[in-house]
Image (tube, rainbow, N blue to C red; front, side, top):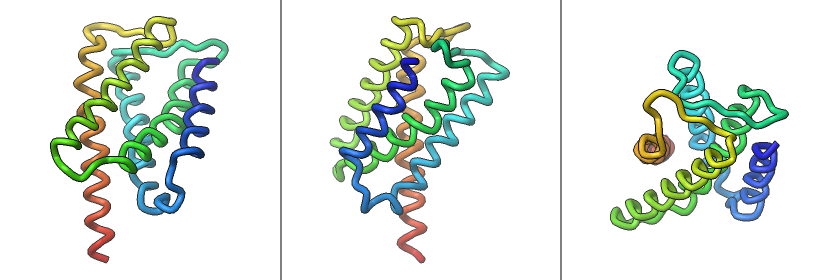
Length: 149
């Protein structure tokens, strides 16, 4: 049930903070993040490093709420506000990663996510850094293609 609340909250934040004029520009990045979430979900079928439990939602439902709710909104807002200078980008990305870890910590604390095998918050920290880097790289790649056409 918490995941539904987070899903709704993320879209309210998008409605309040998202630059609607930039939807055509940032939509591909938002979709990319949703597919990145789906990809990790597929990996978790074979190698269960974490699992979700949020009654009354089934584990698969929680993943879909995250993949199509939170992840696209986070990617959109992350890219929308990214600074120009490299040092500021690094600090900005680190802040987003720390926020993601805090979010995951609360999910862990309240039993909404469980880590398995060797996965822990440190692994999530490094993985989130890579994910935010992929989101930025995808945005730059797409923007370069758009400017050429």
